[in-house]
Length: 65
Image (cartoon, rainbow, N blue to C red; front, side):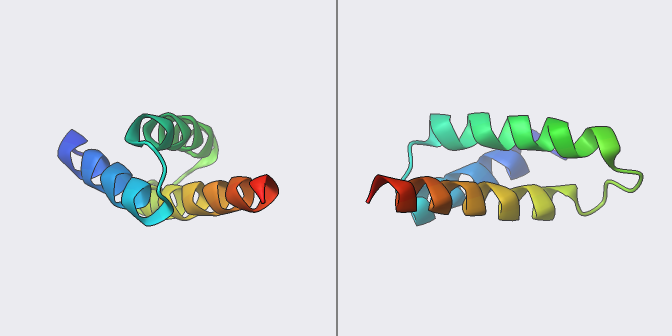
């Protein structure tokens, strides 16, 4: 996946969740690496990773309140 696409995904998630881009980028990279290890087909990885990152950040926000 092109780096520009990843940057756009990270920026969008950061804006949606009011989370620093650096934090989102780290979670995204860690999640992507984890998912890539087991994926036989990688076409939809960015979609699944973005979904997981959003869910992770929502859970963290819930636990703060």
